[in-house]
Image (tube, rainbow, N blue to C red):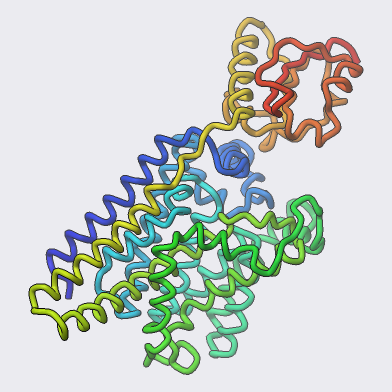
Length: 466
């Protein structure tokens, strides 16, 4: 039974965690990955181009989750909604922790929000945020015996991130072994319906791209231990130490509901272990263009928070017991509280030390180019076609609606005389466009921002001939 003090501490923990994410949002004008901008634009443009809801790159579960916030507030709206999703995920983690006999829900919340990667990324509307929520919801539904809901949550994972297919597949097998037929069906249903609808509209399966396991070698590969230091940095050493400590009491805990093999409660967290293993395998063998980024492991944050809170309570009880045997009662109590306070300081310190995301110079140049193009168009009676390969330009440039859901894909050779093209140092050369080739193709430079020397250039051209 929770007391008024417990509820007050829980509310304070949420306020601190959400407040810190809002501070980080205000201090971070940049994005961690260009993917965030790409997904933001797809979720906005899907209101005009409904076919974008099925876009494989945008991932339909992710696009739909952020559609309304994107329409109302653009990238910032999505980011505020990401914080809401983080708060809901933290709430689910509190309930999960209760199943592991954790009484201090506020400690779970603090161990969640003040992991460095949550502090750094929890406000950025990346796919890992809704994925974390769906995965945590699936695990909690399993814990509470809601097999159908668990199957549906696991079935939604592939629609948010492609590696969710592994978790959904594992759940299907597990549900079949447990004779939970409805749960297994619901885990298959979302991806099946998505592929069926995609095939009806486009004549091919949405998951067909997964048949090419090595679409590019651009992202390389890594060792079996590649993600270990990234996981350590992301979770933070204080929370990681507590989480490893929490494995000891969690491993001895038994679940009497027979929902897990051998009644082993720790098995409820097996999906998180599988998720780590999947990413290790993908990057080690260079499969499916896995970049090996630490942020890919962000969905592990709820499990780390649950285990850290369990470890913290278990360690505190043990230390206090030792102090009670050797010190006067009052001294033992204050000594244990002092050590707990030191641990909390380290947890806070790890989250508070997360650096804001600065504005990339190339993105800044794209913003300046977008303002220049908008000002130039305002002087014309007719709007010529505008082309740009960098998504940062399309985030800053605001036509009534772009010509397509993904206007950053275009054929430079097909653009008519009078068109404007914004060249960038990153994506344009990858598509065979260089300043020299554009000059040969009848393009005249009109303005430039940034520097070619440091890879931040944005050069505006207009086609005068073909």
